[in-house]
Amino acid sequence: MMDSGLFFADSNRQAQKATKNPSKKLGIYLFTLFSLAAILYGLYQRDNSYLSAEEGWGYILGIVGGGAMLLLGLYPLRKNLRFMHHWGPMHVWFKLHMMLGIIGPILVLYHCNFSLGSTNSNLALYSMLIVACSGLIGRYFFTKVHYGLYGQKVTLKGMRDKLKISKGNLGQQISLSPKVTLLIKKYERLMLKPQNFFIQFSFLPLTFLRSKWLCWRIKHKLKSDLKKQARKNNWDIEMLHNFINEVVLNLHEYFSCVKKTSQLSMFAKLFSIWHMLHLPLFFMLITMGIIHVVVVHMY
Image (cartoon, rainbow, N blue to C red; front, side):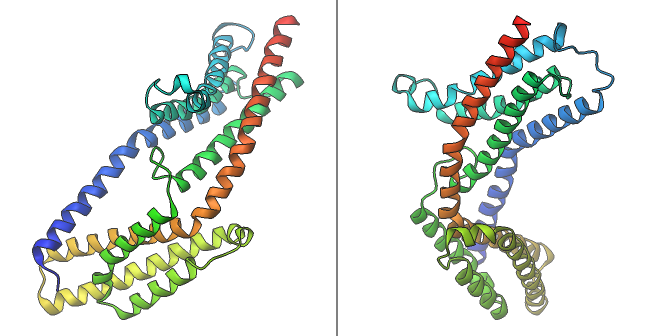
């Protein structure tokens, strides 16, 4: 059995880690909920809205939303132009880029009252929606090749080192159950086996479901085994709950490390392909937007 001091030190460390991450993500969750609520409200009220794209607040929202979309171009400029490298931290620019990429389209949707119009305005609207969807896809790929949404880029060596540490943290705990040890070894061998890019991409949903299912099975089995150990060794309830929480945290971290390590090269390639496509789509949006503004004010 592990040393009690080490056990509770590890438990405290894991508990701090568990409480730290949700607080970091709270702002993202609230912003996402607010954005979804704004879209749903606009869709619900589109037949009752008094906004007009030609005048008043509807016109102003179009100008502000279009301006927000133009400001999206500042992030790649800050990233690539040398004289802008001292203009604040990159993660702040990235946050601003992500926020404007959502706020801008929402304002434009209110500008057009969530409805289609002339061919000219529809082309601008479709271009905007395509770029917005592309941005969300890119955000997903970004998190797969970086540590979190604003972290540094992940390297294969770094992930393998992290996997070793995670496996070591879990090793002493899963030794209580030989069946769990075999399941984890089988899962790791299967996931880390070199695979063709197209095969790995095709079976991505199946891999996700298999990982979730196996994680649930292992978690259920470990909890059962730990409860047996608790009854056998007369553990108190608090110690059992702390031990279970620590095992579950280590288990989730281990599965996350295995998946990220096995899929890193695939997502790096997908992110590279997306990066080549996203910039032309953005230029298409700017072109359609300028044409829309010119045509509307000329005719």
